[in-house]
Image 1 (cartoon, one colour):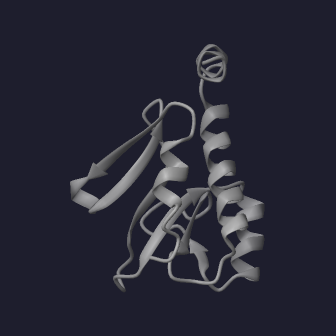
Image 2: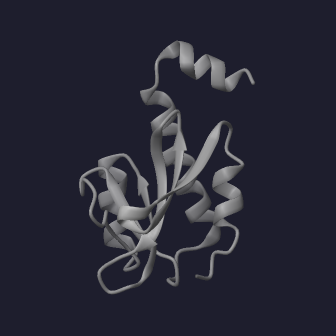
Length: 119
């Protein structure tokens, strides 16, 4: 995996929790129990990170980058998997992690959002 900063970047998100899902052999990053990122391997044993994105933006990225594909073992409309040994720029990957985190944050109740943002 060439993006060695990912773990620290994800865990430093406000209220982010990291766990390991044994059944999937994957590390998950959660916000209030909802996953915003998952690092694991696909069926070819390639290291990947899966992130939730707005569907139209995810589709656009899949056309632009060979290393961004529909989410492996996840809802392929909303989730996208990125090859962690690929050629996606660090700045774009950080932006995608941020977007996934914000999508999950926005899915929480207004009260929970306020609680998280005011910490």
